[in-house]
Image (tube, rainbow, N blue to C red; front, top):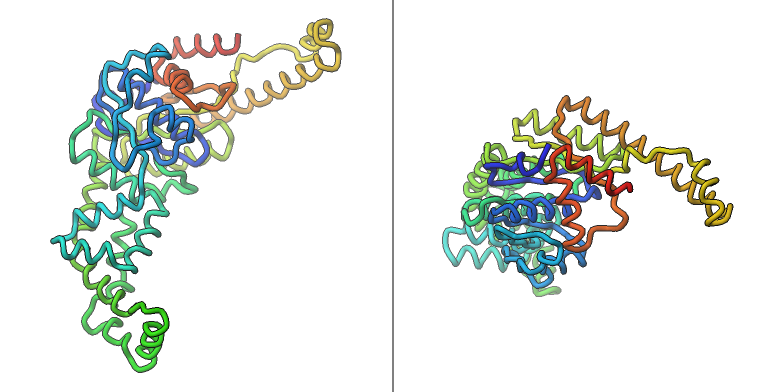
Length: 380
């Protein structure tokens, strides 16, 4: 598998998987590789490491894509034939933008945005970044300013958190509890009963906050936006299932992330979402062969027996990890019955700059033969 081939003629690439497997780095490397081949690409990152963000020039970015200076890539030998744009998601701002788009007029928009109940709710929604990530992706796609959008999905303990994001808020807005507030004869009209009204009155005198008025204004204003949220969720779901969209699942070779990738793949298949392949990060090289005891004997004269033995023990541990990785990857391929798997090696340092992204990008965009040669060079 070659990532470039998987993304040919695609408009959206979604990098999904469990947390801690390198999705952000992979998304950045995928976007950089496609831009180098001539596409105009925007990568939406969630929470990149600070040094990686600085390398891409993200430290001053807001909630809209900004171009990455092509000169940043020259030192690594990357000829940027296209354009790379990047942004860091501001979840709260993105949710505010949804309200701004759906509000029927400026008065309703300002009333909702200034409402204390909304501010608390929007912070809660923003705290679960799945909805806002999909919302930003949808808006960028609709604006049609890029050949390819690459989304780094939020860390998630459950694949369904992301796939279900477009519908989750709509279900809340259409839920029975909310409808009780919105019905003229519902709870909202009874909340000012004798006992409750007294509580709100005391709170208003003590805090200066008219909580009942805030609740009333919020639900009254929100009622006019529910249809818009429903239509937006439907449109986002169409985008996810569109032939121009592709999911790349990212994992590491440990058992738990592999299990999560298999689970995610099953959910994509059940939902008929477009699957493009799996990227396995941080793989220990399978060709690290040799007898550790022989290595210790060979190095004893140069390093001393004690240090040579430590080197041999490290080598033995590495071989154990390499065998583990290979076993888990073979199980992954067998469960999926699919050979669209790209292995990216365990590097000697964390990826925190464009040079590191370049190393990963070479493996992602190499042919099978070229990738084998790169692994051999790394082990040499």
